Length: 170
Image 1 (cartoon, rainbow, N blue to C red):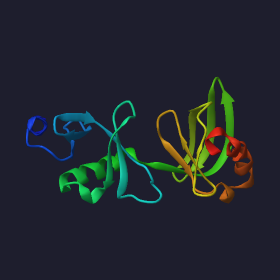
Image 2 (cartoon, rainbow, N blue to C red):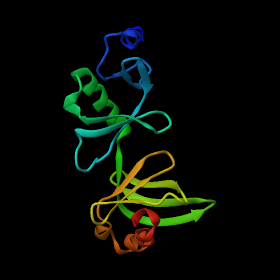
Image 3 (spheres, one colour):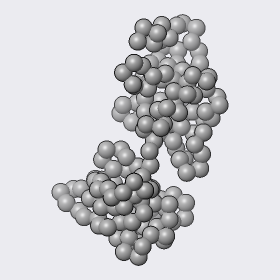
Image 4 (cartoon, rainbow, N blue to C red):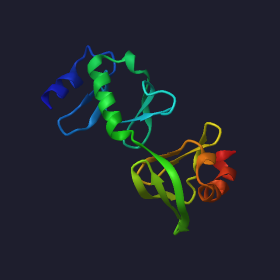
């Protein structure tokens, strides 16, 4: 922890630094700014080494890393470690049910790691990507990707079809 305090108070620090503290939190440093951050790939299916958003605890972007190569080696290593923790995406293979209850939408799905149940707000619609893909973010901020809805079993397509007319899809 002492080493981080020295970095934080260094008046010559002009570039961006990304470091872990001893508690396992990822921090962004620039000049006199120190913020706990969570990294998020903006285009996870297109590039793993570029366009990484660093977001504060309220979800506000405080810095955009355009290329991982732009960072010093220690910062790049810390950011990659952070991404391995925060940036896991569940790939949906099948949708068993979607139920609405008490202002929530409950999804029962099959992913690459087995059956999952997750919840979104009733107004939190999937976002589209590619031609036939959907991205869903649950209440815990986990990401669920459906690369191609048309490649899912027919029942899954039928369950998801109403969301292609959602406000987010227009």
